[in-house]
Image (cartoon, rainbow, N blue to C red; front, side, top):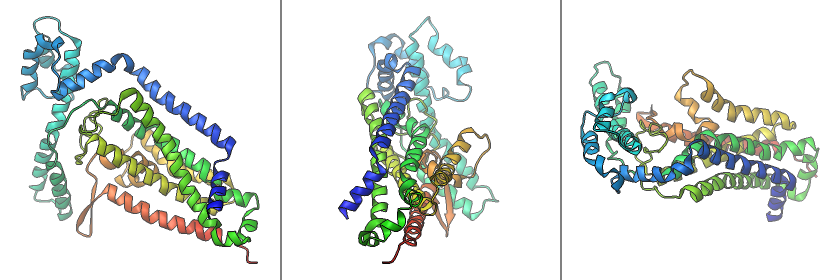
Amino acid sequence: MKSILFFELKKIFSIKKTAICAGLVLLILCVTFFGRAIANNLFANLPHIKEQLTYASGEVTSERFAEDEKRFGEIINNPDNTLDSDFESDNRIYEGIFDGGATHQDVRDMLESILYIKAINDMPHKMIATLYRELAEPTISPEQTLLIQKNIDMLAQKGNLVIAYNLFYDYYNNFLINIFPYIIGFLIIFFIAPVFAGEYSAKMDSLILSSKKGKQGVIAAKLTASMLAVTIIYVFVMGFYILLCGAVLGFSGGESSFLTMYSDLYQYMGSPYNLTMLQFLLTTLGISYAACIGFSIFTLCVSANSSNNLVVFAICLMVFHVPLLMIAFADAGFPPIINIVYGRVAQVASLLDRFNGFVILGNVVMLKEIAFVCLIITSVFFGFGAWRSFKRRQVVN
């Protein structure tokens, strides 16, 4: 079995094809990271960002801001000063911080960040109050009551945010949502689609399956090798980007709340989940990897039912990438169920960024649990389909 498995892996990762893909992927990952870093002037601003976040966390009080400290504290601690959509035009707040002459631009930046965090800290309480008002409506249905109560229970578990320097997780999250699904989806299709279809087009399926080993183990070896190949691809792509981010930005901040993404504090503001950055990292890695495994099994099933590699490529590209592109470029809203397709599950964000619950048999089930169950069911179904389709071609001696 080991020899067959190794042989199948060598067929999947042919030297020339793998070397070209690996080089292109590494180039794309480097351009992705350094392109964003340069666009945001990261390397010049990194010391200021670290100081800003540690200042916001209350860990450090910079001597550079001592002259503004009293006025700054009065504004921050004023319950009337919260961030809203009109913050940029809220002259009352800005006049308060800039009264008495020029002050550091850094102070304004920190004020803005802390007001954002203050708004996010207050958001669960505001959401709970709104939900209780909805519960009091006389026309509310039993299903809506269950959903609202579940949302309230989850929001009530969220305490005050822990703030820390966590730019590594911010860059990871941006990559996971905007770049990773497109890369990993294409690589899975590119390497896995020919596993069965390539044998058909080369007229090798009957010859392989007529052998003694073919009858006993080729199909199992192909399926196992494909799963190992996807794991290698996933670790290569995600592992390299994580190490690149960590090497430049550091890995600190795992104890901070995942609601405090530096560049987009509103990304998960409505989330009912209470996760640290480290928990967020591990959770999203697990979910996105499961989506990749599920999609690779679907690709194998399509490959096992077609002798044309281009047809397999086209079908799999449509299934994985079209929903991503539709949501990225279409203005119209989509039902939550679209978030359980392979590409959206690989992005993960849509499963965590808001309350998405459904009442099933009198119980509230969250969308991420539904997505996980669907991945298991479809993987079993498509895996059996791939096995059965290729085995049908077996030649009896």
